[in-house]
Structures are given as structure tokens and as C-alpha cells.
Amino acid sequence: MCDDMKVHGLKMPESMDQATRSQLCPVVYAVSKLGGKWKLIVVHNLIEGPKRFGELRRAIPDITQRMLTLTLRELEEDGIVNREVFEVVPPHVEYSLTAVGQDLENVMSSLGDWGRANFAQRRNAVA
Amino acid sequence: MCDDMKVHGLKMPESMDQATRSQLCPVVYAVSKLGGKWKLIVVHNLIEGPKRFGELRRAIPDITQRMLTLTLRELEEDGIVNREVFEVVPPHVEYSLTAVGQDLENVMSSLGDWGRANFAQRRNAVA
DNA sequence: TTTGTTAGTATACTTTATGTACCTACATAT
DNA sequence: ATATGTAGGTACATAAAGTATACTAACAAA
Image 1 (cartoon, rainbow over the protein chains, first blue to last red):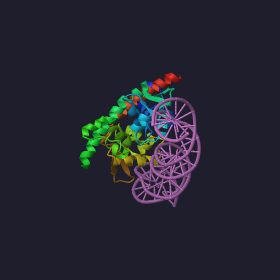
Image 2 (tube, rainbow over the protein chains, first blue to last red; image 1 turned 135 degrees about the vertical axis):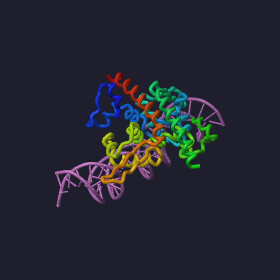
Image 3 (cartoon, rainbow over the protein chains, first blue to last red; image 1 turned 120 degrees about the vertical axis):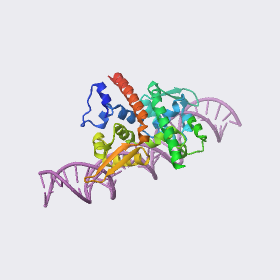
Image 4 (tube, rainbow over the protein chains, first blue to last red; image 1 turned 90 degrees about the horizontal axis):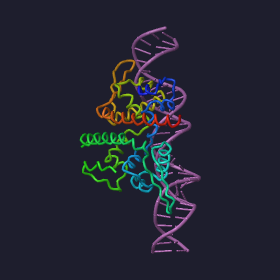
């Protein structure tokens, strides 16, 4: 697992714990950053371009205000999402993907490809 | 969001709930199948080839027996992982990716690419 | 003057996800 | 007779996620 890490000149002994290893295995690291229930859904909705808080809420009807806030805060902390506040009334806040977030495009599209293929398969299997 | 779904000849009205929409938006569908804490880690470990239960445990030291069992059962139900039992004593059970699971290769590699790039960036940023 | 708007925060509560500890069966090795 | 290894199962406990409701600021329109 994670021979990639040779590029960092590091070995990954069994004794190392997950927190440490997640800094070494790119896949484990990525999953730890994107693993929440809503993270990828929010990123998916920002791929097309910046959106306001309310637009995201309407685009993801099942997310609660609180969970959207928490998810956006975490994505912001991880440098995936950018938050721009316009000091007007009523408030105007725009969320967009950073360069790091934009780099998720391949992940999102391969995920979409898989979902599409798998979904099609299931329809045939069930119907 | 999810214009892809036009290929299924379906629209996605606001009134539709998440359960229904997850059958329509490939990304939401994919996330719903792969969203658990351990799902992608297990898939990642099976990409190279079949592994036994104990091998997976050793490869993912922080997963508990219970979570590995639950994760494998769900992946099996979703047609991503195949479980082969050899009726011997002591028990011998082998887990492998189905064709659907193999199709996750692009997802895994793009996720690895992103993690690698992002990880490298962070190292520079921090160090 | 009350209502509406946007993007939240605060609090309490419930549900689901994940984790811990201990248990089994059976054959072989000691 | 007891210990070892495999692939789990089960009861219970905790952590994470989600729900519901109330609350805020500041201005505009009815």
C-alpha cells in the first residue's frame, strides 16, 4: 500500500498510526479531507462556479443550514473552498473553489463516470 | 446540477428527496455508495489483488474487526466486492473487487493524484 | 410599524455511525 | 490438556451527524 510514498523518501512502518500515515498515503490523506457525508456534494456544486450560501442550500435540499455551515468551514480550513464576504445588507457571501479545490475536477468526473456506469448497470439488473 | 441525468430521460424536480435523487445524480449516487469512513480505504487495498480478511486487517491497522466486517458486507451488497469462502479449517475467506469495483481504479488514482499534489503543497507551505 | 431578506449562531435533542471488549468453532501444534 | 490462528458474532458504549427551534443585524418595502 502506498508505494507512492517512496517519492517522499519515507517508509511507512506498521507502528505508525493513522493520523501519521494519512500524511503519507495520498489516498488515505484525500479520504480524510473529503470523507464527510456532504463534502464532495458541496464541491460538486461549486465545480460550475461560485455560489452563495442560499444557492447551495437550494441546490442541496436535504442538507441543513447547520451542516452546510460546518461543511463549508471545514472545506475552507482545508484550503479547498474560498469564502468571500461582501459587506452589504442583506449579507452577501460567495463560496468558490480554490486552486486545490479545482484540482478535484478529475476526482469528481471519475466519480460521476463510475456512478453513471454503475447506475445504468443496476437499472438493467433490477428492471 | 446533474445534467448527466438527461441521458436517462429524467428530470430532477426540487420536490424529489435525496434517496430518489441519489438514483439520478451519478455523483450523489457514487458518494452514497462510497461515503463511509473505510469504504475507499478497503477498495484501495483490494486494487492490487484479492486479500484475506486478516490481510486486510493488517494492511489497515486502525480499522476494527467489526468495522472491517461491516464495511466488507456493505461493499458486497453493493456489488463492489466479491466474497469467496473456502470451506476449510481454519476458515479461509478471500475478498476481491468485482468488475464494478475494478471500475473504481480511475477514482482511486485521481484521488491519489490529488492527495499527492495537495500533500506536497502542504509540506512546502508548512515547512 | 410590521414584515422580509441573507447568512448565519446557539441550544437542546435524537439518530446513526463507529468503536471496545469479549465470545465462538474447529483443526493443528505443543 | 492447553495454546494458536482464522473469520467472524454480539452487547454495550461513545462519537459524529442530523433535527428543531429560536435568535441576531441591518436595511428596504408595504
